[in-house]
Length: 348
Picture 1 (spheres, rainbow, N blue to C red):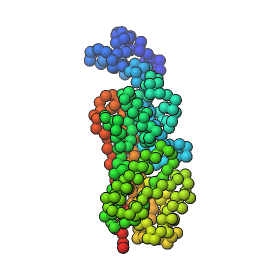
Picture 2: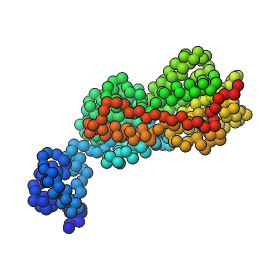
Picture 3: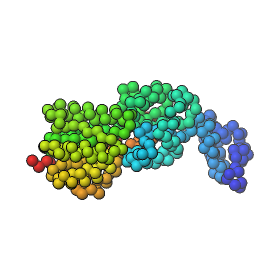
């Protein structure tokens, strides 16, 4: 037998006494051929140790078997972002299982190409957006209208009839947190949201709308339920804003943090004011790991967003779109509210 790297399609044709064209149809699963012919070709391939090159198969099928993964809000200053890392891990596992590669990019894949050029150059078979800001919605609209396989996370956009989104209940879990606070007796609540890029403004506005709707429904004064926006890159800005809340009379009773890395600072600041968690103030945070929060004392209650599962679901949905086998129902990945010692009925 020849060395594996020397075996060619011509060797398979000679061993089976079939034409090169027939061998090519079987390898690329195109055209007409009988089951018996396919069996002969596959048996010869196995015996000779032949493996068709990925590039040759890609050319034949007009597919690259590569998925573009766009990380619009990710940059070198956010390499440890929990959501992005978990989403990426899940996407990579799913892509490997489905025999696809991932082309990771935060800007350049689309920065210089129009939708027409992107489709014509065929660098990827489809694109996943891990997040979508206002500045990307026109691009998404164009991609979907052009029937280019595209998947994104977040609420279903108005122009997306097919349902190309993976929804992680971003707005729902924030509303549910406010409802839990109200049921437990908390009447002065603050939700902290970080700001680090202009494209993320829509997420902030969504949270603001959730708070306003809740406050109106419950008849709460504006100061009793508010959104606090802080600079993602400035720890002192967050510390200043939280300290201001704790010096008010009466002080805030429950706070929600959108980033786990701010929780250590929050615990330290609360302790420095001589306050106790949760007796004086309750603390809850978004988390991307199920056990995140256990390392705090008292244990930190978290809204566990299943970013890993979202990444897996995004890849599977995109591959279904590429292969034309998926339905038009959006994919929903519910969150989990994990109770620990930092959140309990308010003691008045």
